[in-house]
Length: 163
Image 1 (cartoon, one colour):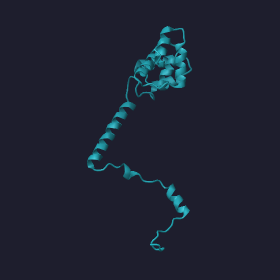
Image 2: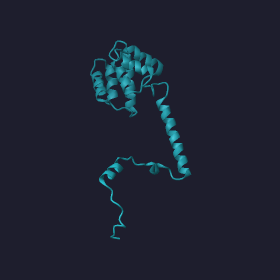
Image 3: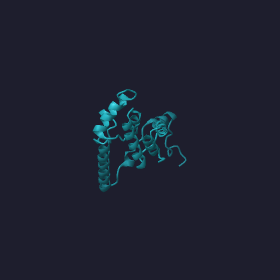
């Protein structure tokens, strides 16, 4: 066994580098074993895709419409006098948005009722455990919580988690 015929040929450094650069096939590791496992895998994939489609392409109530026409109109109106009108149109057609960015736009609108809608929706999402406050949104809520309007302040505190 110590002879040269028994040993396999050594690879050069360039051959080793070429092997490292090649993508490795992992298809064997991910295949279900057996027909029953493959059928379960296919059914689970179909169920997941159906659920995902339902969330991404849902109509109404603001869910899944963050990329829709009304949401785009709100984003385009940020910082303009037309923001309140864009928010009202969204609210009229789809109800309160679920997207925190759109809710923050409602808080920016120069209309107390729109601000209350945004604050109440944020408070509801917080109670459901479905809200991660960004630094900007937290600052916006603190500013409203320190304001003179008691109803807005209480709703902002609730959205922050203090009420």
